[in-house]
Length: 215
Image (cartoon, rainbow, N blue to C red; front, side):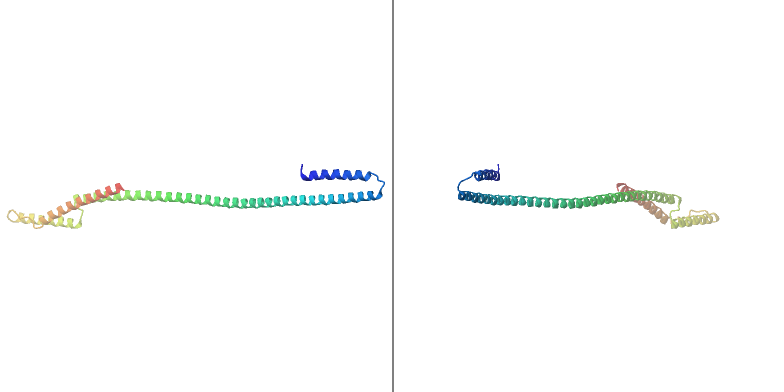
């Protein structure tokens, strides 16, 4: 039991005792009056004590109430702060999600561009290979047929015309062994030059093919 409970019981017993003394009749009025004044004084003291005790308890309860209100205000402030933090984090997550989506789209576009570049590179390599093959065939065909160079064709035609004129003059005059024309060594040099050019062209094309194959 608390201290206030003990004080209340003591006050109740004292009041009961005063009431009993009040009911006791005395033959001396002075004593009765003194007893009444003492009873009133006791009541006043007890009332003041109870008042002080109640004010103290009220003050304690008020302090506890203020503490509870402060805690409640702090909890409300924390709750509001948590709501703001949650909202900020939600916005941050949405922004990150958008960034990830944009990065994925950009990566997809880059992959498409890389694929297109690779396809174009393959087409260019195929065209270059066909061009090299056709160039080699044209060079070989021109060398074999005699259409590889205009200067070469003119030289061959000139040589044929000289041979015809030589044959005609030899048939009209005495048959004797004619000396070789002066331009035959030059034609031999031309043929050897064409052979060397064809060989170098073949070597160059083969080296290009090996280079593109390595790429």
